[in-house]
Amino acid sequence: MGLKAASLGDSIVNTLAVAIAASALTASSIFIVQHFNKRARIKRIKRDISNSIQNSINHLDEATDIARGVTSKKPLTTDEGLIREQLARNYAFLGEEGVAKIRSSFVIVVGLGGVGSHAAHMLLRSGVEHLRLIDFDQVTLSSLNRHAVATQADVGTPKSTCLKKHFLDIAPHAKIDACMELFNIAAAPELLSGNPDYVLDCIDNLNTKMDLIKYCVDSKIRIISSMGAGAKADPSRIQIADISETFEDPLARATRRGLKLKGVESGVTVVYSTEKPGAVKLLPLEEEKVQEADEYSALPDFRVRILPVLGTLPALFGNCMASYVITELAGWPTNPLAIKLREKTYMRLHRDLVNKEKDGFGASANIPFNVSDVGYIFEEIWRGRSALSGTFDKLQLIRWDVTKPASFQNVVCLTRHEAEKHEKILPHELEKHYSPEFIEFVQSRFAEERKINKWR
Image (cartoon, rainbow, N blue to C red; front, side, top):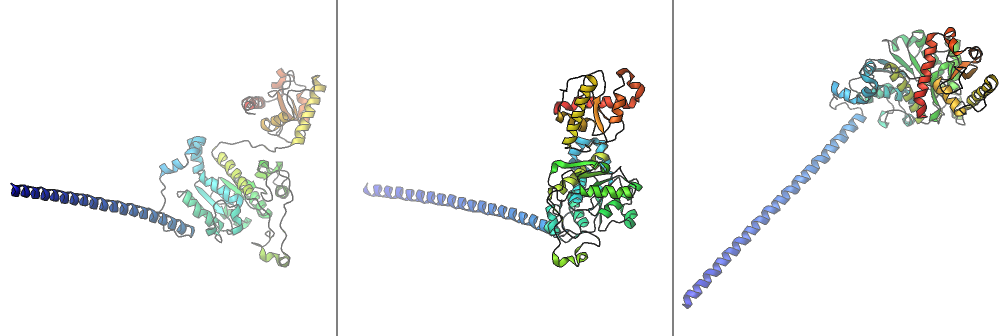
């Protein structure tokens, strides 16, 4: 019995030992498998991170290559569906027909500095697919405060080719003619060839500017011209008007006078600023350069001294020009106010209206609008000109229907001479004195006032 018991005990011990050994082996195997799985996961994660970093480096290298002018990147798509998606907001605003007109248009921008680069840039982004960019100059480091797309990598390169390079990244389907040339009358027939739909004058040299405008007027090419954006800081004073209506802008005054000598007094749309010239002037030329000033100018007879420029103002000028041209091309014409912020004019119109109401109609001097209302009626409804003749001189506000009180829909803008005749006309006699077209025009302006008055 004793031997059997001992043998049985040994067997149990052996069995337990085997079981423990097997369990330990199993646990060890599981641990080893988990360990290797964990290492595999870590390795895979590291590989993914490494690939991600390498991709980022590749993209960075590609961007650097592009900045350096390396053209090894893959060509961008010109798929029509993607082009329409890129212009989706324009289609929503201007409609199919309007955008189609813009896309098929040909526009020339002369002068590619702060104003011209921004104008060309937004023309491209708005859908113009054929641009000719003309400028003789190169990108400088100091011009980066106002240039639309130039980077430090573009410094020293022609402005025209700089824009073309960046523009083809934005709209690879566009046709961009880059012309590194100085505009002059002799070169005008070639530089402005191809029947352009519009020309944008963004030149800051007076004589060249006048030559370009005169050529376009004589050739019946639509043109919009930028006046002086330098030394200005107030964006609220930027205007779009006919050259004959400009004031407070020295470059506009000089251009207007020069064009008058060339036989052009009106019919040229310009962007200018009514901001009064302040303390910012041309910076003086260093004393050692005075005797040899011509050597420091870009070209003979060009300005040598530097005009301080706040970069935002040329950008706003350029965008104003682009917006005007885009709406004109699309058949979505706007009605820019000729002149704004003429407080003394509004006060005079208000005073004259009060006196006329009191003296002519025996009415109370308390007419239903103040000086601000008069400015609104004069600028917004009658565009600062006579409703009858379209002139700007010696204007008055007077009742349209002389039998009814003055109101927002019963005041018309006329010259003093026209007003003297009008106040003698009774309502039922209007058709005897005015054409149906003029009467309809006046009524349409009153209808317009009813719509926009609620937004004042």
